[in-house]
Length: 261
Length: 229
Image (cartoon, rainbow over all chains, first blue to last red; front, side, top):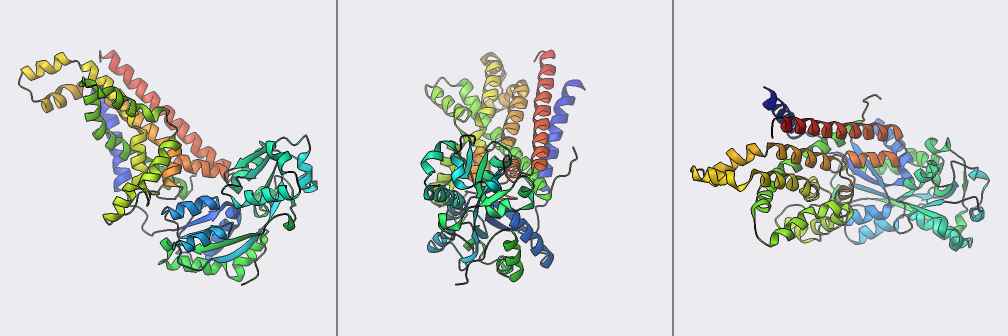
């Protein structure tokens, strides 16, 4: 009883696991998989819950990350049905490669802001970042995150890029950047206004808006990918984002709406 | 701590278990002949093969993940081959994850088995052969029962190592719910969203699970030792 007992127990446990993971039915309906720039994290969650009230039968799965990375993943065949980019040039690139199934729709203009969880960022300006007591400044990685590119441009525009460069830490995307600041690991950060005004972050600290003239516009665009081309839900969700209700929610998260072309 | 996982986290848990079970089963099949060969060959290529098998122990997972993405994706040769055969390329798929995990956990299966097979010794095999047992008979009725302990260790380590995988999965799998978002990636995602409650619940769960698994292996090992083997 003793020796075989243990082995049998483990074997049986493994068999049980086997049955659980292979014979259990997978979800019946195919969900719509939406890749969204992480500045949309809170605004999009709100939009999705509003959309679910109108179309409860549609299942949406959100994935948040940096726009440049999503572009590369979609170009490499990632199964995303819709792509919301913080920079309209990424979905436009996919369109040129023939990987899209709709027009590229501009849906918002993004803004950047100084934000801190440890000091009064609402009373600070970009130039104050050279101060000695600010040791670490978080921005998103300018290589593949549009908000990081705009932060870099603004710092260059006010002429302090070289001075603050040694203090910079880079977030993988804009919500990771916000997390670096929220944890206190970075004293201050340049993040998306849409995150700074969200209830989740507003309770942690104030923000000051960085003037639009200091950086190129952050025109954001979305597209239905070729992968989502024959999904009616993709069109439904796209129409909802472009509706008055969708615009209202986006505006409440600090996005201004681009002039209709 | 309450066990209030969201639907997405349950999916991630299910996917993680499915990945770990699949990887362990495949490695049991692949690892057994490989470990047997390594424990008995006198070939000079043994050292090279052994080094290759151990490579995932020291290679950053992102390196392995990068190569896999390049090979399995739509422009890689395996990805193109799959598409030519009317299938799909393997980047961002569960199959891609399984291939990555099999390579990544290879040493965790092969090394304990190789040690186990070596300690069986040639003498027992020769005796079995003299008694008229075929090599397969010998393997199933002499070697395997004597290597039970090694099989247990190897399977447990492979299983646990796969559950804890992160770098390769992020490279090859992306972060797609229901397909490639496993627990470790879900934790990363929750932390980024500053949802520390969910990240904490899942992390604590994995911590307890890993500890229990290792403890179970120790207990069984001790049990075997007290039985003489």
